[in-house]
Image (tube, rainbow, N blue to C red; front, top):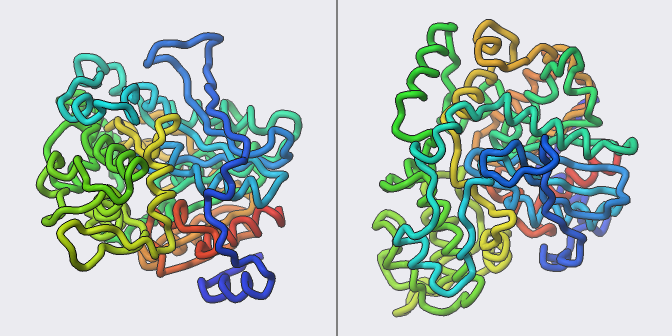
Length: 448
């Protein structure tokens, strides 16, 4: 069964059924929420320990669990608003948002405290470098999938139905899990369905202008592994690259969280952070704390995949404020991004993880994937329902890529939803009454 749903159809259906509402994420603040550790060993205190964390949202009595994997440089907190909404709207559903092991490395001890600007911008925090974290050079997709399976199996305890999804490159991870061979057991057998949010494999991001160049030989894979060993840092620093600012890999994630914290504390006060940011990230006029956060994420986002629609800058004034009239509420964006447990952004993204995500993009088992320890043996056998949501980021290639997966597997039940007016971060942040993703994924979960 195939279904295609446009944004106009979503809005019409929601209006006719009374779903459209002005309810914001804040109305779901009473949803039970826990930040839970999953470790391979009984105890694990060290940052390098085999542990991940999960933000659990909703009733522990729920019989359906949606496990969500964040994308590149994203952390579990990116799903806080959407997860609380879905678990509130569907009381028999819990949402579990994964934090990868890399989040054990961050120093969030001073966010929200007096002196946080000095602590983080004058490098008093505990930073991870090649000298302290060289062991992370091997942290790739095989490790993430193994840790994700620990979470999926826990979610499915007692016969609960597990839906696995992800945003952006987290969607790649969800598909890889479904195709993975766990000592003879296909990953898709753990799952009731797959949920892909503006991401996927097989050239899903081509329409954005970001083409993943597939590896062509085992020799090329070996060369890339050797290059990772020679790099000055185990981590990519991709957010800094997108902004074209120098600094440690964690610098831009820190800037985002500081901006969110000040917007949460004093939305309409003059921003003390503005003058301390790198020049490329500073507005050319004085702004309030809310306006600085809006500038970074909406008005002046460095790339469409780091953008959401949260309103616009006031057009005049000695101190420019933020006009909060977008599908996303800037106050709620601040509330979500100011959190530390979990945070919304990941500080440390390993080079090895980027290599492995490139290697799985064709979604085929090959000498290259086997050389990298990536066990994609079951793509053609995947038979669980598939939900795909596509924003305007890729101009259609997310759905095109998903159709390739369907054509090369046993998937029969698939739903494709497109809202080209949304940008990459909008599905997690737009308020429910203006969010086609939340409306349609809720319907998908309810029907399955």
